[in-house]
Length: 471
Image (cartoon, rainbow, N blue to C red):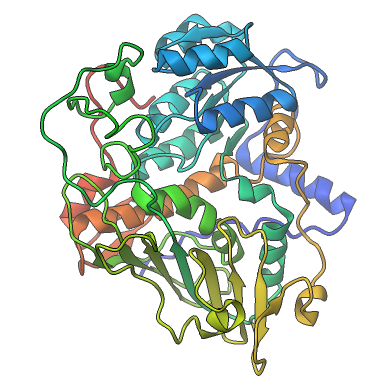
């Protein structure tokens, strides 16, 4: 078996001197120059263009503006959304097509925010980064494994400052959990179980027949972007219903695992898995993800840690048409004893000397139970956790990290070098879902291929519609 690829163990510093050494070393690893902001000094504001101005893009825009971004351009395929956001930023130039915006305003833009549906993330981000623009992209970073790899490589080569929009990365609770787990308080980690209450959008459905008139405010061809053409259907895809469609989204796994798996991914140093298998799903539909699924990832020995199995479970507790898949009762008995029932989402790490449970999507709080103990206790109150020193620098804020990185500070905690790695691993679960239940993939991470299954290749990357490309 080839030697597994190992992620760096981010965050083992305990003094200002060490922090300076850590940030300088990280910048060197990522190829980030100290004076990153071209032609500007540390006190200048940063010219930011936004691709996907509504929804999460609206809060991304507002939060970036608060920490030093001048919003010079807004781009959205929906004229109603664009007009409303333009009213808030009257100095911003308004565009419908991000390709034209970037070409026409190349010299006026320092950085971009990408907050479109998943299927446009990579096309927009890679075009911007290829032009030397810094990039903040919403999660999941991309729709396919190959796109994630491209984003990671391009960001490193172009030496741009990046950040993915998994905001829990900036939380003290997540960073504290990483410190505690890596300090060995639960011994050697052997299992990871993560479950989600998503989807909260339609999936597990068939494509409806016919077509509806496209609203005058919407450019449907631009909304489709690199995806194959299909007729417009009212309230089926736009605005928020696209996540469950395989041509546009990544289902519950792609949407939420960039949050819920973020903490354990870092704490457990999860490099490429050696195997992935979809163990069970609700009814299979060819164009949408299932209403519930269970997927197993197997990770080899890495950086002194033993092999580990990770199970992902999804499905809305409010969905009554199918059985929602969750960890078995014996695995979660301490959680149920603590809370009275299994929470809608959570992450449980099982070690040979204890367990750590996080009951929310962002790892912002956690509970601990050691060997011989009878119940879970708050991590902030458990003696074994309190004894662990702080080793990871705390965040000034998710957007502030990105803006600071643009100005030459340390790379943001969820920069693409790590965020694209996380995304790539997560999207392997989507590959397994598409290949089918019970088909275990023997995975070659560096080469992005299943050694034992040719069908997987069709889901690792995708063909772009004419007129669209991955830069």
